[in-house]
Image (cartoon, rainbow, N blue to C red; front, side, top):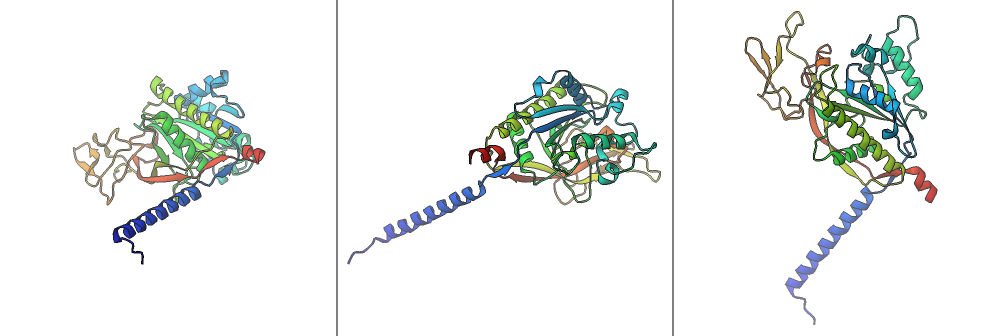
Length: 348
């Protein structure tokens, strides 16, 4: 009778378990890596001047309208476009209302009458050129270039947490810019509806770079915006050429709530951003940390059960919107393995 040493039997069982675990990990990897075919991205627009006093995008778009070689890529059309020319001419945020908040069905469907706000009429024109919003005929991708007075750095704004193509693009841009930080703000929210200019496209991309005062151009801020657009367009070209992009995960800051300034009974602001919060966009804010400071020297602290990450801190344009900053929380988003469907169909 042949006996097996207990130690050898134990080793065999351990080896078998390890192999099973490795096989399951391999199977899981293969399953998660199954490629999703996405339509090629052929029509791209770069918007500047959605807000007429945010000048980095205005300067870049005007330059690219005169000399667009820098943004052209093989296999796609890239159209630079000045979205709010009247506001740009006056170097003001808008003429009648915020263009970046009126791309909703009600405004896009309004009858054109004499007293219709200029930005609503302009939104309908933009929707006609680059949309219609939500249709197959809409542009594939729009980069909408913005500046902020807040210390947000070069921020990418994501509208849809299930947009694998855009998440893959953001992953590519973030890696291309590393070690420079490139935060991603996810504005998907059940009750906070933005109706942005870029939402006309199938893949809307907000580019928010600061700090930069309104009506001012800073070379470093313009350069940062320029690099983001370059890397985004490079990604599109690689995608269209048939390169596959395996599953990836990015960190995003998901918007949770807008926070107003403290006000008196006359609705006047009675406290300002505390010095310890000023310029601390994307930094953790914990219970008890200072938020506001009254002119009498009283500190108003944050009261919350969990750590949040404020951004758009003390944004000049948001005083009229009663917004001192927005609270965000960190989360991870994973995009599927993608490739362009046209090249795959041609080779199959």
